[in-house]
Image 1 (spheres, rainbow, N blue to C red):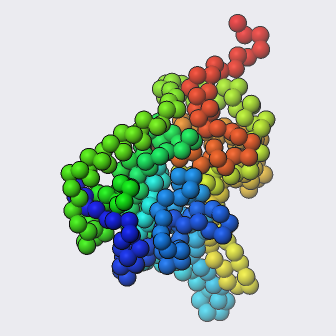
Image 2 (cartoon, helix red, strand yellow):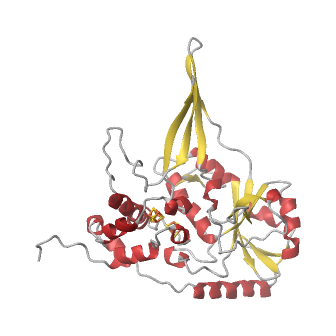
Length: 366
Ligand code: SF4
Ligand code: SF4
């Protein structure tokens, strides 16, 4: 692992040289006042990798799992061989995302376990994760996207990444981690493909490494909202499903889906056909378990037909079902859903209650 130094007044030049070889995306504030990742050429210089409010409003998940993407096209040529099906080519073209927060990189690593990923440089071609093999669209974009992280020196009050197996300077999922040292960035290379980002940088000095270590400790000390989760793992699914919590949440939740829309680990999708005349295309679109239509069957039956069942599903999936299967939560503690919820439902309070609340006692029971 090697570390280099990049002076902040050289950032714009560094990014524009990188853009000669790769498509570079950086956090930038849009006209709507919201922060998102945009192509570096469209961001106003001087570049600032640190969004106001700590993180981009939307996570960079959409670079690997777009809100909508074409899977295949079809054309019914009657008399010319019938229906022609054409698989959509997997996307090509390499990109680098600069300034990805550690929680968002960890989220992509969590999703690798769900969509599957062929490990970069793995000669055996083994697919990591993914019960049905790697999703080709996810795997292709993931391989083509270099993730360059920016450590959080000042976590927000809504952050709880440290409680979710992550942390403000966490490295999982990243190819390089940058640390803001004030006048410069410490660039720590974490993978082989991250190495190409440091080709024209000077090596860092020991004092720079020491400074980064003390910033890491300071950032960790700012995360004070500890809450226990140990009992959730021991509690059975049925016991958790009986908690009074779900009725309390269902009374206020609007099922608006804002929480799932901004979440870096939410990955539900719907597949729909758009048809015009004899031609059409098959699309994969983000969906949300908060929608009443999400689990409605063709018969009309809906196993999650009420709000209580949908609210319960969101939290049980993240904090019980995914951990049982994968050994880690389906949440990285980014805090976006806390900020986005119009009725102030706080995921930390829900996890506390899942851990501690007593199940509902049937009426008349001792
Ligand atoms: S559930 Fe909330 S805090 Fe957890 S990863 Fe999703 S948006 Fe972030
Ligand atoms: S953002 Fe809040 S109100 Fe909207 S679906 Fe999520 S928990 Fe419910």
